[in-house]
Image (tube, rainbow, N blue to C red):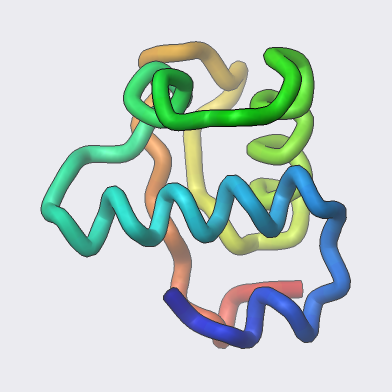
Length: 81
């Protein structure tokens, strides 16, 4: 996890999702909303909202449209907006 996520001042949902995905990535798991969902403690709609925000800010890379199965990739901090 890159602590620079806090410098982005992203929403709580986006920041929480980034932390969750980083932990999964550190364990070597592939990333998707389907993988993150069982560990997500927030509202169902906030998971997708957080993912979309992270994609817009360049934190995550994914093909659109975003689905449960879409593979998510965490970009290098230099790509974040």
